[in-house]
Amino acid sequence: MIANCQCKKCSQMLAFEADDVGATVSCPNCGSDTQLVSPSIPPANGEKVDDGEFYVWLDDKAEGPFQSQQLIELAKQFPEMAWSFAGGSEWNRLADFQKTIEKVRQKDLADKKTAKLKALRIQKKEVQELKRQLSANMTALRNEARRQSSGAGGTWLGLYDSELAASQRRGIRQKKEALILPLEKKKAIADGILAQIDKQIIELEAS
Image (tube, rainbow, N blue to C red; front, top):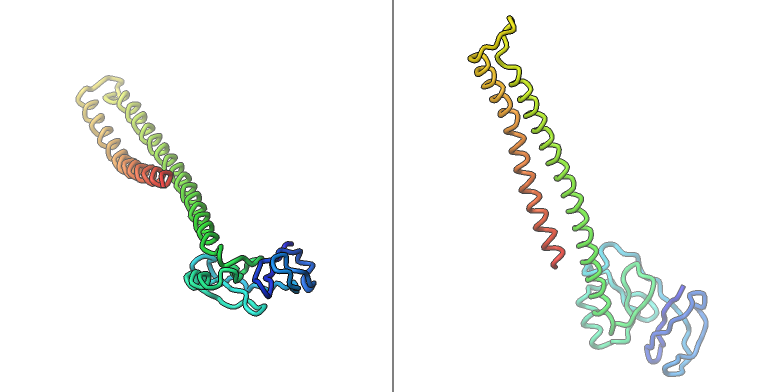
C-alpha cells in the first residue's frame, strides 16, 4: 500500500510503500534527510464531507477533527500542510483540499441522483403494474356483466319477459358500476402518481 509523508524541512509530500515506514530518505525537493512516517488517521464518526471529519498532519500527529471551512482557511497560510478524511488511508496537500472536496461532493451528488432515478423507475413499474391489475379487474367485471345481461329476462317456463329483462339488466348495471367506481378512482390516482414520477425523472435527468 502507498503511504504519504511530509518532508520536515520543505513540507514536500513524499509517496512511499507503507512497509518502508521508519526508513530515512533524501527529499527529492530539498535534499534533506527525512524519516518516513505516516500518522494514523482516526476513524470516521459520520459523513466524510461537511461534517467536521477532517484531520491535519501536525508534529507527526493527526490533529482534529476540523470542519471543511477551517481547512480552507488553513490552506491559505499552509498550502503544503497535509490533510485527510477521517477514516482515510492517505494524506494530501491542503492546497488541493477544495478541489478534492468538490470532486467528492460531485460524486456524492451523482450517486444520490443515480439512486433516486433507480428508486423512481422501480416505483413507476410498481404503479404501472397496479394500473394493469385495476384495468384487468374492470375488464373482468364488464365481461361478467355482459354475460349476466345476455341471460336476463328468462322465466322458469323458458319464456322471455322483456320487463323482467329490463329490471334485471338495470340491477346488473348498477352492481357493475358500484364495483367499478372505486377501481376507476384508484386508476385515476395511479395516473396522477405516474405523471408526478415522470416529471421527477425528467427533472432529475436534466439536472
